[in-house]
Image (cartoon, rainbow, N blue to C red; front, side, top):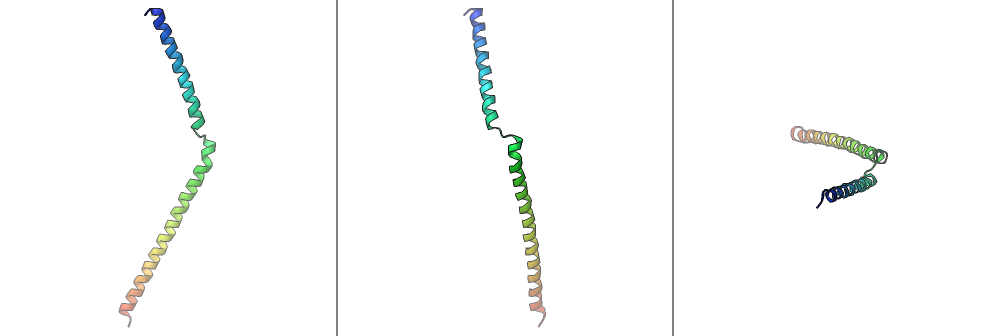
Amino acid sequence: MTDHEMIANLHRRMDRQDELLLEMRDVLNKHVATEEQLRPHLEDLVALWRGSRFIAAIITAIAALGGGLWAIVAWARDHIK
């Protein structure tokens, strides 16, 4: 293989690499969501997460209150006669 053929082969490979990189960039650009597309969905997700934490806190408080009331009733049944 002559030097000219080796250089031509190298140029063909580099051109093919550039074509592949451009194709990959185009495919990634089609599949990567932009911030404008993601922002509303992320805000909804955060709102749901915060709401679930609030509801969990309410349920925990109700359970603690119910447990405390049950303890008072049980104590009263045993000690008040």
